[in-house]
Image 1 (tube, helix red, strand yellow):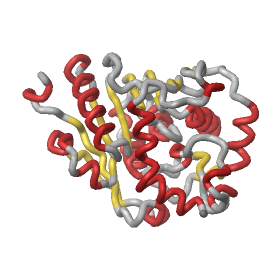
Image 2 (tube, helix red, strand yellow; image 1 turned 135 degrees about the vertical axis):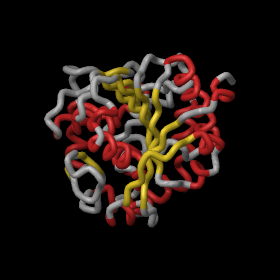
Image 3 (cartoon, helix red, strand yellow; image 1 turned 180 degrees about the vertical axis):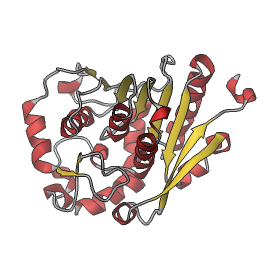
Image 4 (tube, helix red, strand yellow; image 1 turned 90 degrees about the horizontal axis):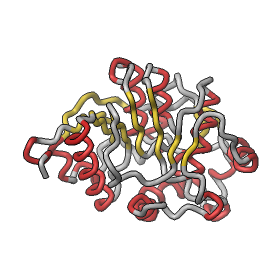
Length: 271
């Protein structure tokens, strides 16, 4: 099965596996990564993992909304675009796709640096790290990237290197339902693909806003699971971007992606 077919499988089915990992505390990390829950600048990478990712991804900045940002992604020129998914030695590489919600968030931050300038930013479900990178480029005072996949953490550091940035701190654990951190801004893209995960996000984000007065921006291209969730009534559209042709083809014909501001009503804030 080619990776293109694998990606469709991720979109339609394997998301459930990933959602279960988000709902668990540890996310089912391999044993060798159990102690590797946080990266900071200067921490060395596993040379074997680094070499594998460098060999099996392509550095690209085209076909997406943010040509300013270079990323290591899986593309048609990569071996695993054609190989059977079972030959990939790590967890499903959600991080190796630049999803449209993340693209919209990154584009918005680059075009509107005042949104993050001098502020602390949490990038939840960071994946390839593009939105965190955009925040650093735009003057955020503090950035923390979060993803439960430790290989995503390695990819983020490689992507920082590509963009001549010092790696930002990365936490590799499920922080949903944890204590509300003191962040000025939380950004998350393409996270509403499972109803139970979406419910957990809704509750936790509402708590962050109520306790810390955190601002929340969500990127999503209009997937059914997102538009049909109850959080939709608490969102205010910030901006909509037309997706480049390559991204449309990668995402089953989705044509645009939207940045939303999450602003729960007073009655919900007290829930």
